Every structure is written in structure tokens, then in C-alpha cells.
Length: 130
Image (cartoon, rainbow, N blue to C red; front, side, top):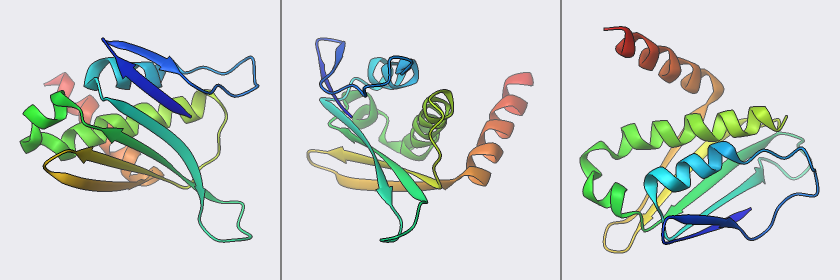
């Protein structure tokens, strides 16, 4: 699925056939980070394996460029929102991979297992209670 983000507007160029499809969490990512483009896709781990990693690519986000010191923290947030999206749409996945592309800063990749995401969500809840 590809989203093109222009003038704070996110449009899906390709939607799944499923009428129950919910892209609310993807919309949140797009509205908050305002990338030029955002792409999500499943990637098979092995040729005959049913297990898939799920990837999200974020291209040229001014928000991430201005806050490059906190790229890992922002990537954590993106991965959590993608996890919620996949869960809402009953998508089975193994790991989530967040790739952030910036014009002059190249590419950064972050990979999260389900266990990693549970720990991040737990820590965020504890931080909010303080």
C-alpha cells in the first residue's frame, strides 16, 4: 500500500479489496510525520515460509529531519502504530521494519519483534503515569 502525502492530505493510491479495511493508524503516521511518501508491504522471510515481516518506508519527512536526534524514539512510535494497524486488520506478521529515508541523511532502518513492541508499549505506559 502506498500513501502520497501532499498538503497534509494523505491519499491511498491502492486499497485492499476488503471493505472492512481500517487505515486509521496509517493515517495517524502520515498526519504526524508528513512524509512525501509512505509505503507499507509484507515481505516473506523465506521462499516457502508463511511468516512475513511487515515493512514501512517513510520518505523525506521534515518532522523527522528536524528531530533527527530522536529518530529511534520516533521509529518506535511508527512501529507501534503499524502494529495497531496490522492487528486491527487481522494481519499476521513476524517483525516490523521501519525504514526512514531522508534526502541528505540517507536511510536508517529499525527492526522490531513483537516482544520488542510489547516492551516499548509497556515502557511508554509507565512513562505516562509519572
